Length: 345
Image (cartoon, rainbow, N blue to C red; front, side, top):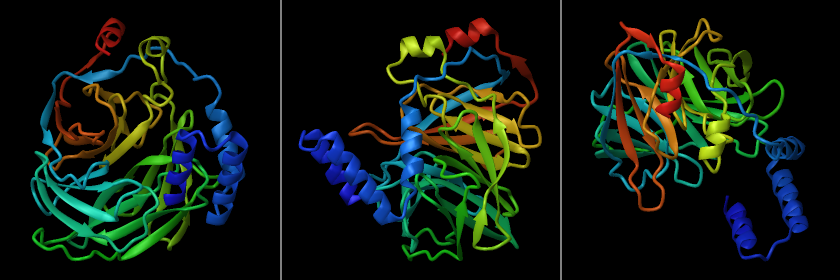
């Protein structure tokens, strides 16, 4: 990461031409053991025009309340990229930073209050998600080191650790196991991970592929696992012509950045809104939860109470890092009108 920051500085300073940049990129990737050809291919595809979609109509809850709960007070948690509501500690959220930060697990209140920090004895390339499950009356956390913006990591990791029982301690946490995950057809960038409530399966949702792909990782079969493709989320919105007219950068505005699972309800957050899919019918139309238009929304989790969720965003420069609570009704559902969808974006 330090080398990459130096390269970025050289580019900004105008001291590095394209040829030198490409050579450094290739050398850096090969030294790290990455799939350079896959990365160059993916980056070339990113240069193609954005694939625009049409305005979609989704069912929405009759009652939806989104509450700003506060700012993340712990200034060490500036890039909250994973979020989990604790069952063991009511009113507590767990979170992690993404790449370029110390390997640390953070505990915060649902109002953003700083509660605790725990160093984690696990490698960190790009922690992008946090999930959890319960087994044998014990709670476990899963830190997902799955980010791959350049799409060149030959494998990614899931680190499983017991949930801390004492929030007044700062003991270093040691994973009970680390699972190396590969994809069947090359690297994928991923920021959205969820785990079945019994800890049997982890689900990884690709960020940049169209349509987005949902992979399953069987957690009980060993410490090196190849993910299997479950299905695609073809109904996740694509940028529209209106988006293209109104926003400077639209390529990834509907990309999935967080995920949570409760029963068969799969909650997926994008930079724009959140959607609830039926895991048993992923080609069905999801329920849409309209969220505030904020930048850098990176994480979401179901709350402990039914029909609740929490979402956070990264802090940019000196701005706040919001915590939002989401409450909705599942009893009454209406279809959003096309006009309403367009007017309320």
